[in-house]
Image (cartoon, rainbow, N blue to C red):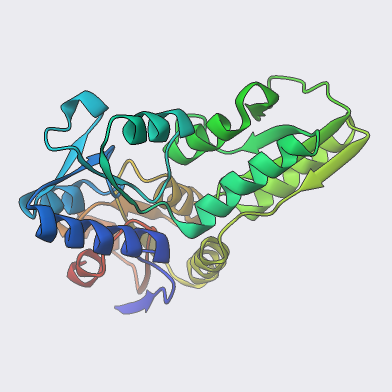
Length: 264
């Protein structure tokens, strides 16, 4: 069987950086706490916990006042609370996410009402909304935004096609629009390559956590073209998928370590 392996698939710069910073912190302090999973990959989180990186959902669960801010960033109120209560903070917010946060703040200061495009329950989007306060909202196709002057900031892992579609929808209701395209280049490269491979392969395997937004989007994109399967590890693979299949494409989300890709 011929295998087409994506060049751009796998863990991204921001996640790789966060893992490195977390491992260094765990080595220094023996244990460090992450507000929410450091990486949207169940198997990777389990491995990191063995190395002293503990996932918690609330500040009150942190036992030694050593905390890491994951690559998605955090709501500014949470950051202030950590600072005011004497926590030692390792801020691993992805530089690209931090840039998006700054753009939200800039737009607010310039008098724009900010529209954030992304998944409302994603930690990055929640953080961006926090920087916008009462002058921002998350885009929903079910809610009409009646503002004359709006600024647009997308989630860094958003599909570019979706951004273009939303901007087109917003355009008819506004007098002035300022757009910051904060979508990470790696996201665009990963998406384009996955589609290119899906068009020529007989089937696709997309590797990554089931709670990973960008991995799920890759899967949804690929299945438009060929039979596709979203797996977390080699254990999820069913050999019956490959009956009468002569070629398969393999890609992975931004939260998928190289080891998991190699195993598959």
